[in-house]
Length: 68
Image (cartoon, rainbow, N blue to C red; front, side):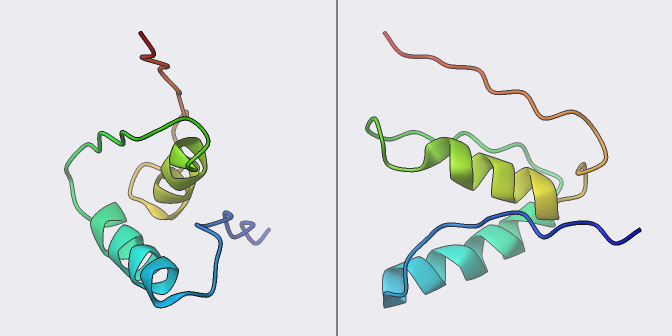
């Protein structure tokens, strides 16, 4: 069964394309990621993408909201 490709960051701008390339590259690293930013900027979507294309994609995905 082929694994579904996770949704990545949206957009067709140069910045969005660079983000997708950078995210794929980072996803292959053994390091954890901390994604921060304003509400509604796509942090969870980026995190799911990183998880889906990363080394631990077969493991669980956990969102830890840290709003204060």
